[in-house]
Length: 379
Ligand SMILES: *Cc1c(COP(=O)(O)O)cnc(C)c1O
Image 1 (cartoon, rainbow, N blue to C red):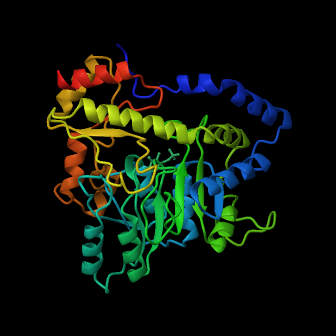
Image 2 (tube, rainbow, N blue to C red):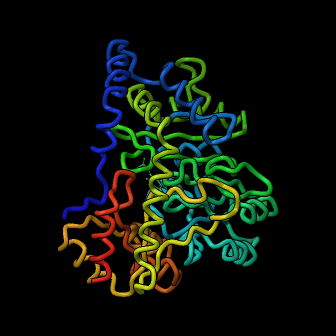
């Protein structure tokens, strides 16, 4: 049996007519960049995420970049983040000349470990030339980082909070103090509509969310070269605009998103049951049973196995799509050598990079396919 890591054709076949209709409408209008389609979609995303404002952006990467630009991140400023994420998280910090200040992850959730954040801040010398300006948690694989204690620390130290919610649209957190959904708890939330995310477009796309009107206005301008009014520039932005075609397609898909999350959770439950007692560490949904529906949206279902590379080979030989997110932690990437980190600095991130495998989890996966994956893993 062939089981792909992700198969978007099944999803498309169910919404094909609806999508083709709006694509035709956009083509007939010949209105391709920003405009009413993007505005409607922004409003729907703001409502969905429980925030006041949303700004359509060209990609998740650009969403992170424009968020940090809006916070006036300066060269030399430090931003606390995780070494166990997709490159864009830290790339956006480094591209502005700022310094990523890594802290290790919690091995259960793979998210930033709040205790480590506090330790780093307590040790950070007041005399340092690098001013710690922000913290950038990532809601990895579709489960929120532990936001309440992070928000408490950020208040205490006067840090801005930018959530990398690229993998976590709609994921909820049982917050006592803030919004509940990913991207609504910090100062700014950043989303990606890369095709493999739970809400994926027909190409690149992204979104920034915020409850702060001043940040909203600034980000909306930065997205279009800092222009306001037309051809007057009080700040330097870029071309971070979202296409109308993407907004139109995504707006159709948004209607189905909750059912897709639900199907992913059902699939996760099936794997959990099938892999019990097999010496495989399955994901721990730490907020399950806390009265929220989207305690995890399983953008990825990631297991840990001790002999990872031989297990990968076995899965691939059985025609099962799988992937390692991520094989090299960010502090050990060649391009960050100058930061002076070394192997052993973040043992949990390094261990995760050695032990994890992402299995197929997309909504249209069948119970037969899952049984075959489980059997292969146990065989
Ligand atoms: C996908 C992703 C991004 C980047 O989004 P793009 O739309 O591909 O630019 C950033 N951070 C994380 C954690 C991601 O998974």
